[in-house]
Amino acid sequence: MTHPLHDPLILEPPPTVEPAALLGLLAEAYGLEGSLHPLGGERDRNFRFAKREGGNLLIRVTHWAEDPAVTDFQTQALLHLEAADPGLPNPRVIPTLSGAADVPHDFGGKTCRVRLLSWAEGEALAGSNLSPGWQSRLGALVARMDLGFRGFSHPAQNRRLLWDLQEAASLRDFVADIPDAGHRALATRALEYFAEEVSPRLAGLRPQVIHNDLNPHNVVVDPADPTRIVGVIDFGDIVHAPLVQEVGTACAYLLTEEAEPLAGPAGFLAGYTQALPLTAEEIALIPGLIMTRMAMTLTITGFRSKLQPENATYILRNAPRAARGLSTLAGREMDEMVAFLAAACRSADA
Image 1: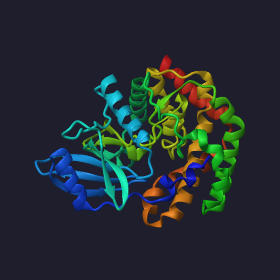
Image 2: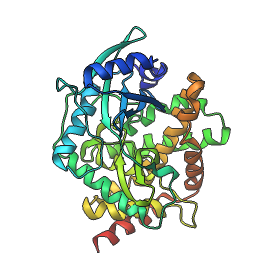
Image 3: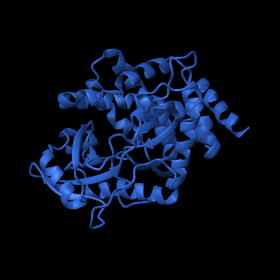
Image 4: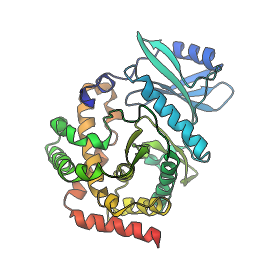
């Protein structure tokens, strides 16, 4: 089976889109007129669409190499969440005039699927000036979203995904693409630990569909009140996986530069476990999952930025944070980190 890093979805850049053709499609299929404003994207070509009558929408032109069943998996997940918990701030699918969830269209000789989604007005969590305690509020919201995913399934949910932590051990052959020797050593150690200690225990834990990419660029907050989350976006990496993988992935982006770097993940866990308790077996894997996600970030972005130097700024946006975090945690005892995070979970139950 082809490794996800050798998939055209990863090797080939996002589709080339002629703005005039896309505007014509929007007018014909959706009855909408307006202007296009390019956005970043790892695989898809994304735009903010400013409607002529006011307001914004998100356009996603799906990579031509993505299986249409996977695109439908993402769409059906959004529709399921909307029905399960209408108050969740996830994107809403905007149907075409005929009621379809997306439109196939030829761009540069390749068939892509065009989707229109609601737009979250605000700014990314990554650029916000946040007050203490925001991690707990984020954790509570993510738990609510994971509860909303309960019972959802789709034929494409078991697709292989590069950013699936369950694939981490297979990335060891690609660590050489990390440019910094020190970072290569840290990533190698983390991926070896995952393969030997985490993966065998992860496989037996409760699975479900998860968002799988709760990095600070995918959480949108109200600039006037950064404690208020107005959007959880980019469901392109959803996957059926152990539930604790959601937590480990989110916490990998929450390390702080304070005296206790795990204070951010602890706050997240306090909010998360109050709504959705974790077992002792799940909590025991969280530090290893955090380090694995950071090692994956360094490895995957190192590989992909060489292939697509024109998109390197977007691809590498989370790499410096991952390198700092991995370096910080590398000197800590695993048992001590598990005990610290377990205490945060117990405080939520008190």
